[in-house]
Figure 1 (cartoon, one colour):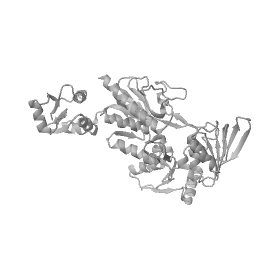
Figure 2 (cartoon, rainbow over the protein chains, first blue to last red; figure 1 turned 60 degrees about the vertical axis):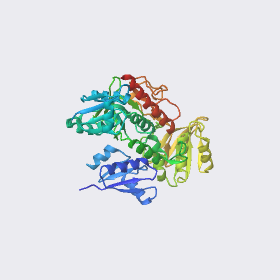
Figure 3 (cartoon, rainbow over the protein chains, first blue to last red; figure 1 turned 30 degrees about the horizontal axis):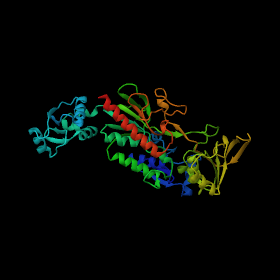
Length: 78
Length: 394
């Protein structure tokens, strides 16, 4: 089954943009939310990441990755 | 399929084209023409052009030297020649550019336009420009969004169709021989006649207790990314230059109170200093040295020492933004190239490193003033120096 992918971003975050492009290039479908504007999403991001206060946070299935780490993302997608 | 090339005595691109074919063991028939001669007339008739060289594969006119380079880069050349097995050949690049920030991308424009077979290898695209929101001091743009500027740089380079390997780290490098070798961490190896180092810089850490432990838990090196997560919070910004002042301005409409802690008096542009001072939200502590970032699982405060009195103070904050300058990304070159005590690669005014065929540009070098416009200029210089070097090799 395809893993559910969600990315938490802010509008000025270039790493988030690069991460989204990376996922798109890989043909991965994902949900994206702006935690600068969406407080509920920010709370959710903090909860799943053990309190991260930094973007991007990417959840892939049961994995949560803080930061744009290509290799981690690839591992999690497998 | 036979390759035929029309050349003329004294034509530099004819020489380039022949050398290109010889280097690749591609046999060719050559017809040397002079303007007005019978053969020249026949060539004009077949091509509709009088420029030289003119290259034919079988009956097809594929154009001049630039087209030849392009055909090879795309693999179409060997297909046309019927040598399909050649596709897997390890190509030899005229220039391998390490880094895809303003310096590296600018270098690429210049090498490609000199018809040098170019490869860009980089961890990411855009470099430090992507750490800021807007760029206000790049000629021709009174204010431009940093991401847009990078997109413009990137698409400019893409119009020339350069080969790129993005998202990979270089694991090992051998710069000493005439042919340079670049090996990625995944083991893939690339060969180049010249290397242009444009690897830029990384955020310099404070190196105080708590910093590593609380990274992404309140400690941040990217204010444009993380500022929106500190809504109505008290935060500290460490540093006194433009980057620190810009971080304060990124936070000024979001955070409740901002403490700016600088080792020296503020050194950033007066324009930014004025804005910061007039915001009414910022308390400035100069000649103070941060000694510890406090907190268990989240940043709870920062401890600093006044250099004037020696007293130690703590402030309660939820975030610490570190903007104290750059560390050059030069660690893999440090054994082979000369660097200064900051680790910046020493270059002369032609961007030469002292190692034949190896050039460097942008923030990884000892050239002062880390600015986009400076990096772009230095990138162009490094590329032109690499071109000059190759000409002298022949």
